Image (cartoon, rainbow, N blue to C red; front, side, top):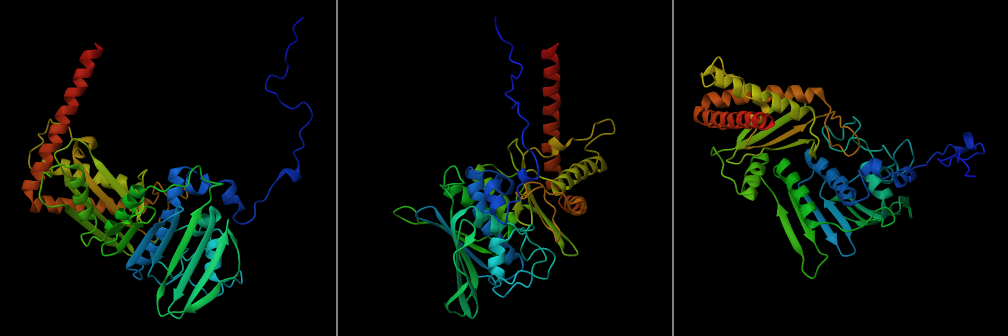
Length: 409
């Protein structure tokens, strides 16, 4: 006779021992090594490259503060990353709460940094004080060198732990920080950096910070591959570069550039229409690429649709009985870059894919509506070209909708 399995899920029949002894407290950077995905998104290629971005973003923040003009990123044999800048250098003095040198604190303690509202940085992409310490925790080893204009300091860490105290290795009149590290193969699926992925990210940073000079070198092969990135035109040059890469024709000669400031918060938008049928909208907050958009994108889209509909109504291009153009219509063939720099940027999660500040929506919405309206009034030929493109998209969308209905019937 067959027996019935009364425990198909395989649940232990003896009472599991779940008491206070089962509750674990992970000390220091142990939590990062245990759950790296929470801090860098994944342990695949995306997370691996995110380590580089975290260190570079610290140098970019120095540039934003006006203290850094040169950033160098080297890919060395053995998949070692070295990032150098000529900023002020991470402070080396004793941090009062811990009694440790500030540079040691930055690399070994989570939520330690100079971006929590002190006078060090008004605007920064590093908001949570975890970037440098997370990179250290997930590296087989990491070495930091700091020059403060008098001395050169050096410290080495292995898997997040310091090997020896911070030490002076010489005298120098230079200032800056150099960080070298090797991602831990025990953590990552594969430690292999893609040059083009890093180049794309660093080029974005050069566009977003007009005037900053960034050098990327790949020294892993027999010959060094080197790229110098420097764009005085800022995000206007970014739009031109995208159109050149895509091989599309612009519908109007100049890139439309709009900018506004509200206290210490700034917003800038560059946009240009082309003869393609796709939209490309890239948004950034404090130089971080917000891949999932957020408040600044919402503000841009709403204002753009409103400006174009209002202009079309005012000049009778849209008649009284015509429907308003939709967002997808007015963004067909559009390339736009939105960049906001906020004193208190609020992102969703450590990977910062989406911006949450409602103030950013208002800032961008007001900027685009007011200044694009003025631009259209001063450049009616460009305005009509854009509206004709939008009307064509609207007619095509309506025709497609009718064709679907006929096919269904």
